[in-house]
Length: 145
Image (cartoon, rainbow, N blue to C red; front, side, top):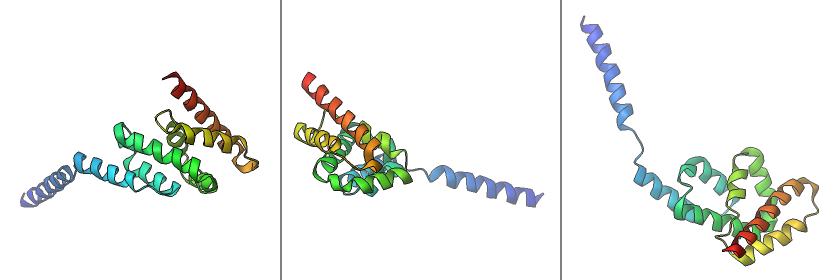
């Protein structure tokens, strides 16, 4: 009989530990915010999405949009790295496309459209078309506001 009690106590202890090992939502949000503010590469964004994607709303979403649009406008040469990250993490594409939006710099959006339409690399053709289309739509949305 005492052996059954020992097993029961072990099971209840394990359940109690598992229940108490939850993530503090406020601390997790703060980490997402801090991590977003340190984004530098497409790999960083992919890592952020996997770890903190659930926090992609509000001012953090605006920060992600700023990163995506500025990265594309000011570092178009990083497109091969973006393509590599998309091969490793296909869920990154919807994030990137969604964050090319009218909340960002008009000049950066125009630069992205110019880069995307000037692309002559077949490897990036579809990606450039998607990026260019979204940047064009964001410019239209910005004009309508």
